[in-house]
Image 1 (cartoon, rainbow, N blue to C red):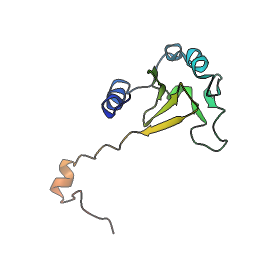
Image 2: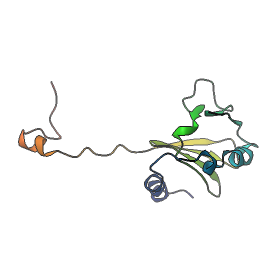
Image 3: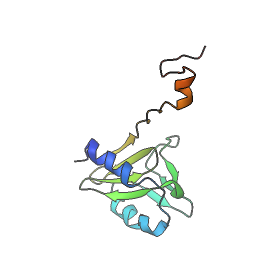
Length: 121
C-alpha cells in the first residue's frame, strides 16, 4: 500500500529530472502496463492512449520525468509537482498532487510589516 509517508519520501528522494533516459527503463514499464493501459513512447513524449483526448494526463514529456517506480499494485511516474499511479491489475490511474510549500516570511516582510495575513487591495 502506498501511504502518505511513502509519497513524501518519493518527492524527497526524486527531486530532479532523470539525467539518463535509459535509467527510466520505459520499455519495460510500457510492457508491464500493456494489459490495462495503452502507452506509447516516442523520442520526446509518452502518450497514454487509453486516456481521453483532452485529459491533461494523456501525454507528457520524457524530460519532465523524475523517476518511474514499481510497487506491488502500481507503477508510479514521478514528476516535480505530481505522481501518476498506474494500476497493474486494472485500468485505473490516479494522480497525487504535491502540496504547495508554505512561503517563508523574509526579513524584509518582517521589517516593513508585511505578514501572512495581509491582503492586497
